Image 1: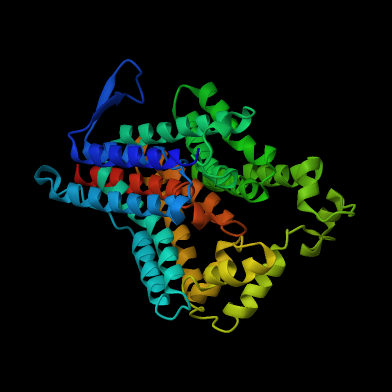
Image 2: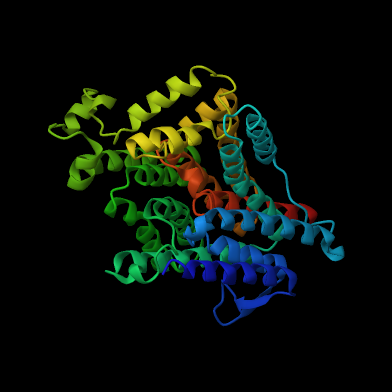
Length: 440
């Protein structure tokens, strides 16, 4: 049945090109169900692309990795969308990609990992790695050029929420997901995607009248990481919630942040499934021991992550701490050497991979992107008077920090279409809304 994914891929790709080069589509207005709104071609493509990040279309028949092809096609569509907007005479002055300080740092980071392809042991893996990091960049630039109306931001977010709800229906209704194998991303990627959807719904809870609806949706997207016992996405969700309230209330949020932190720690020790996954077996650890500082990383069950990380750093990072061993080098090792011997072909830690491949220079540049975006969103939220722009800013800033944290112990970059696309998409839309307000 996975062969059907090739058909689904062809259909959604055809829709993308059709939306981009036609006059637009008419959809229901996000703020008034009794009204309709028209999206132009690039806006239609943006709505389709952002809403369907959870669709993976995984298939590997005929030795063709369909997900890799889908990633490349989406990047091409984003670039074509940018050029189409630039070539429209009526919008040439306003609908250009917006480069903030964070995006210039991102461009420098991409240049650095491209340079890393010249001294890697595997140019093929290096190029594949560059493409994974390139997608959030071009997606963000496309969003900054395509989105000038707040209603498009809300509608795109609502579209992503709808797909997320459909994903949850297929995930929790027994056997139904067997009907569509490979259509959606893995649950680990979805749980990270839900961090952004949770923050978007929380934003609408505070800024819309449908508070009961969006509070329910916020909890709906928060619960799966606990039910699936995914420690990485739990950590990301907690950080994202803390970042949201810090942006909103500034220093007044400190009691809320403390409460969120305490709740997270208590959950680890009181939820049996989370406790058993967090700590090594045959250990009787208590909350009191944690409070007194009588616990170390030796108590944590890492599922062999720590040993893999130490091995990778010994082989690649410590020999080349500044520039790294070359882009894609660690992935080649995991696929071709370590993976064949240990049945593990991913490192489960993007920060480790960045250190090994591109050294401290790459790691610092990539960290700077998140820091710059967060503080830019913080400033916009407290300095801009447009409500929808503020909504977009707090969503982008909070989800960005939450998802960046998950890079510590998961393969977030491998899931770029479903994970990194969300905060960078929201940030790109914020840049576009800011551009419009500055031109007004």
